[in-house]
Amino acid sequence: MTTVLFLSGSPSFSSKTDKLLRQIEEAFQNKGANTFFYSVTDVPPADLVFAHFNSQAVASIIKKVEVADVIVIGSPIYKASVTGVLKSLIDLFPERSFAGKTILPIATGGTLAHYLALDYSFTPVLQTLGATTILKSIFILDTHLKRTEIGVEIVSKEGKERIDKAIEHLLNKVWASSYES
Image (cartoon, rainbow, N blue to C red; front, side, top):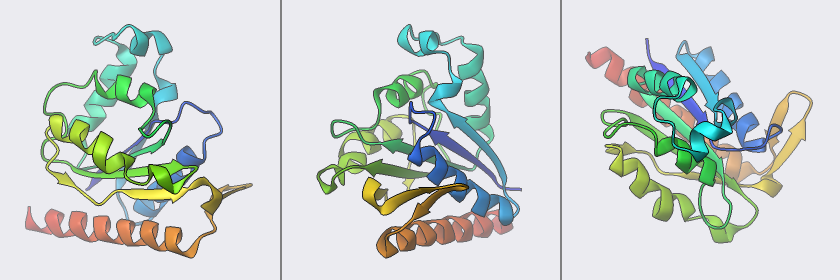
């Protein structure tokens, strides 16, 4: 069975990014994938600020990274980069943690000026952790997301198509590789 880890870098408890990742997680669950969801808010702030490599919360996430076939990482973009708290968490991961994993970076942001932030500031971090299969990043404008009672609705046709295409691509890739094994 395929295992997909969702990792949200949003420090907000009412995050559109979290809700968007949860919808993508549901699509994987509906296809029979085993999923896990973590947010940076699941880690005590002191563990991140003081780089507690032996943190129980961080160790739990690292164990899920180790068993994941696919990692979907989402973050709002602040000041042309993923959140500092997400970077602080990832800095605690062991070297080569993402080797052999398929990675899908997703970001939300307030302006198209941040569109390339994932490619230029985050992809090198993922590569440093050993990631070689990094899918094309997805960027969704905040104005293309609308909060609803059940989560977040993507109100832009282009944004919905990009998310749907990425999910389909990932599912096909993951299912194909599970048949090869």
